[in-house]
Each structure stands twice: as structure tokens, then as C-alpha cells.
Length: 82
Length: 111
Image 1 (tube, one colour):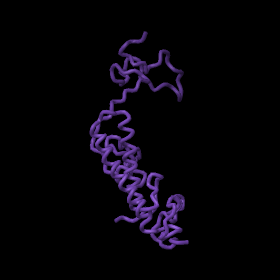
Image 2 (cartoon, rainbow over the protein chains, first blue to last red):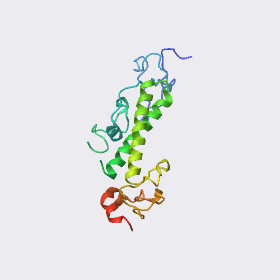
Image 3 (cartoon, rainbow over the protein chains, first blue to last red):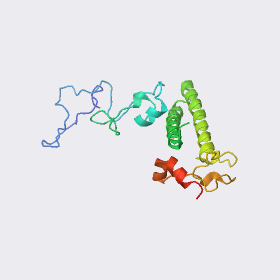
Image 4 (tube, rainbow over the protein chains, first blue to last red):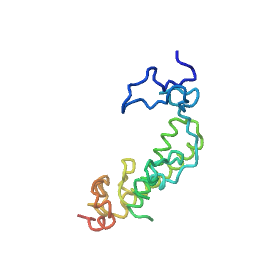
């Protein structure tokens, strides 16, 4: 049974060296995972209501909820190049 | 008021907002704010659809009303005659007509 605070992101046996070596930190060093967090268990908070965008802007942004408006483009703009 | 394309744009925007609100309300069935927003935008969409049908052609079967549709008689084969208005207006994939429907409507009227 692994250590309860250990999130399990370290592999039990060290992976063979080489380009595909695991990126897990060496034993003893903190792995950076938040305490009590388990791999592969996702927690999604219930979305709160918020003042939505106006319809015209919402269609441009792709959502009516500002907190869900996350344009994943390197330049921070959106597909329409604004 | 706005011409055909501006009206279509507003209908699309309002419809998108309703889609988003529906998704939200599916997971928040007791959210009063969301329900109020939905009612407001649903009424707005009905009004826009009705206006579009009255002035141009019915977009949905619920708007088919030969007595009141197409008062501006654009894009109809039977201007001035009472007729089944469902086929009026440019075919949705007729992009050229839809882009400048106002001119296309004027040129196409009656033939």
C-alpha cells in the first residue's frame, strides 16, 4: 500500500534510462502534486451563474460565460484574429 | 429595421445564447437567474423569427403563415398572391444570395 500522501506519480521501479525516461522527480524530492490529490481523479467545481456576454459578443467568443471564455491561442487573440 | 442579413445574424446570435443557457440549465435546474435569462432570450428569438417571416420568409415551420409571410415580397415566385410561403427566399446554401440577399431578392423577385 503506497504512502497515503504519496500521489503515486512516482513509478515503483525506476524506468530504464534514455529519452523516454520518466520525468518523475527523483525519490525524496517533492513531486509538486497537491496533497490528497490522486492521479486520474478529476474534480470539476459546479459552474456558478454570472452575467453572460451579450448575444453578439457571445457568438464571437464562443460562449456566453466569461469564465469559460478561454481562447487557447498563443497570441491570446481568437480565430478571427481580433 | 435591419435588413434580411442583419436580422438573420440577430437570430443566430440569440439562438446561440439560448443553446448555451439550455446547456447550463441542464446542470442547474433551479437557477432562477438562468431561467429568467432563458425566458427573455426565448421571447426575443420568437419575436425576431416572426419579424423575419413577416418581412421575408418563414425560417421554421412554426412561422409558416401564408396570410402574413413575405410582406416585402422579396424572393418569392408569387408576389401579391396568397401562396405556400415555405419555399420562398434563397435556398440556405445559396451563399451568394444570402450574402447580398437584398440585391438578389430585388433581382430575383417574380421569376
